[in-house]
View 1 (cartoon, protein in one colour):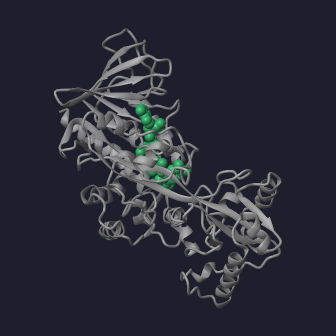
View 2: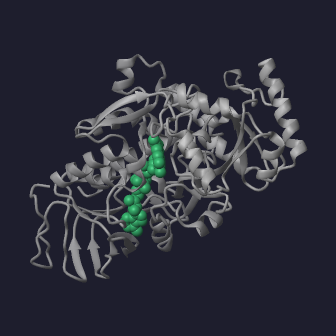
View 3: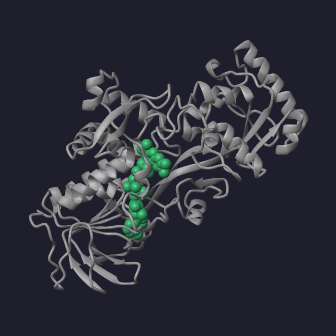
Length: 505
Ligand SMILES: Cc1cc2nc3c(=O)[nH]c(=O)nc-3n(C[C@H](O)[C@H](O)[C@H](O)COP(=O)(O)OP(=O)(O)OC[C@H]3O[C@@H](n4cnc5c(N)ncnc54)[C@H](O)[C@@H]3O)c2cc1C
């Protein structure tokens, strides 16, 4: 963009940086429309503008950032940051491990391209003033997680969003918040723009040479979770709902796009009266040293699977009523308060955090007789409170304590580091449930990020990026490569813009 302000062809309205105000029922002409202002959409908008294209960025919510503003770090391998740490993982090793662990149920080309280009994408973000540091999330993961350390005093996803929004503003991108895209405009089989509607009911017809859909999948629509995701939305819930209802997928399928396979970024967690998301009590639900039982009072997995949050979500969801209980004692509480936790909730509650507020959280939950948390003086009493057969729970705890004494778990081979007996002064049960950070998938794209129709042919002028792209992950999110979703969101947004700009030459 050469000019800081965009002059509309149809009206004498001039837009300022990032604070657009159009007349009602306006027609706008631009090169590129990007739908959704998360990390995928903002990366697309900035890259498109850097290539000299006039860009309009539409956002449904009154603020930019989407779920990306809550994220922490992006996947990359063999990045400049990895080089400086002498991290050993190569791109080839990463790709091979990824494809095998995903049972080849993914797009090999797009995943290969992403692995190859992931490091360069971090360098591109850094060139906009965003600072990174690499972290290993849990002992079983590689050093792929590029955490946003700082952008003008803000860290994590919010820092990336701020950095990209500043860049978009500087480049003259027109950002329209509270203005969801509602329909794609087509002419002779080509996408030539979108229709959008703002909160006041004004309609915008935005003519463009290309459209990039980056509206972040469908996870906040329980009906689609059931129909598209084949999950019971009562037992598989969005943990940070922001009204993402699969708009891009719906708009594209209406004009002939194929609806592709969907997946979720699952995670374990807890809920109940008096329990707050990410509170100290919430953080206990992620700890590998708890004993997990189902509603029959039976153990059902190696609890250190909590180190792999999306696999843990599967294990809990697989119980017949989609929940379990984490059983622990006063010794666990002391350990969490003094030594700090073994498994971080990402870097939102990092590993080693001393849960100083845990006693208070416990008091608060008990004061409201929480349905998600119970305390008792004996295992039998605890069983009664959580409605599991007392005989079963007593037998499970006794067997587990023997396992801890032996430091060997014949049942599930749990890592001995986490074998701690349940024999403190009081006993506790915290409800375990399955959630997801986001749904993942919905549209099938090719290597150029073009959306494919039901005959597997690209729809001219239409691209998709970020979480609404199918086949990047299999049925279970690969959290062993930390940051895959966030990394791909930014990478694919940028590369969709590069390819779209190429066709405009
Ligand atoms: C608490 C939390 C922590 C996370 N941590 C990580 C992490 O560390 N690493 C990782 O890889 N992933 C993480 N994730 C997942 C992360 O959200 C995704 O990886 C990624 O940021 C999604 O990017 P996106 O741009 O595709 O979607 P989003 O960031 O969700 O952006 C989509 C945008 O589209 C907008 N939109 C929807 N419909 C329309 C419409 N019709 N018109 C216009 N706009 C529309 C939405 O309002 C939203 O702003 C985390 C998620 C959460 C909730």
